[in-house]
Image 1: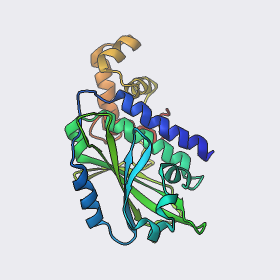
Image 2: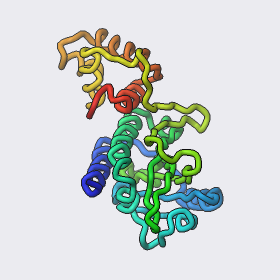
Image 3: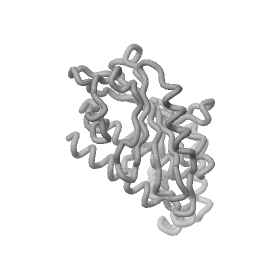
Amino acid sequence: MQVEVYKNLKQTWINFLKKKDQNSHLEINWKDIVVENENCCCSGCFTTIYNSKAFELEYIDGNYKEVLGYSKEELNANFFATSIHEIDLPIINKFEKIALLYFSDLTDNEKRKYTYKYDARYQKKNGDYLRLQKEVSLVCVSENPLELRLIEKYSNINSFKKDKEPSLCFNYLGDVEVNLEKQNEKTQTISPAEKKVLHLLIDGLSSKEIADKLHLSKETVDTHRKNMIKKLNVSNTSQLIAKSLINQLITI
């Protein structure tokens, strides 16, 4: 099962890169990233730089061995996908899809301001499992929009979250946190008509395209969208999609 989920994670990123706007880019100084992460990492934390096009790690700082017990030669992108506990792995696969859906609907300027994070149990070299929180920033290191990098900071949270199910949230400029964990709110129910609209929003269709496909007016589609945003207590369509998927109001 781990190999299959690993392939799904890889395909998720391939699809995201294909959809990325060819005229947009998020530039950042590559050397500054490395220097900054070398200086800020503390005990129990480590940082990686992940090339989503090549599906490989391009950088990892020195604290990984203290946390996981592995040498640098033993760590790669495949390790971080397949060392996750088998119960957590399908959940993490879903989280990655949700995160990319979330980012796909943001402008380049907004992408610079958001990070997302989730936690999972990773297997250490001694066989024990350790719960790590992973926080991800999306950046690009050149004018080529396909040269996308993920700055991934891993933190040991095993001491205060050992047995709970993984959770996902999005951070805006480190100040406003959009928490999309499962909730049992009675208001979190959407009608069959709204579900049809939501499915097409996930597919990337505009309100006009959805209206044409469902034989509705654009105003009706916009009303469904606004009603769902209000019901789920979110701020925009990206958060609507993410929260509806996490709460299993809809599946992809």
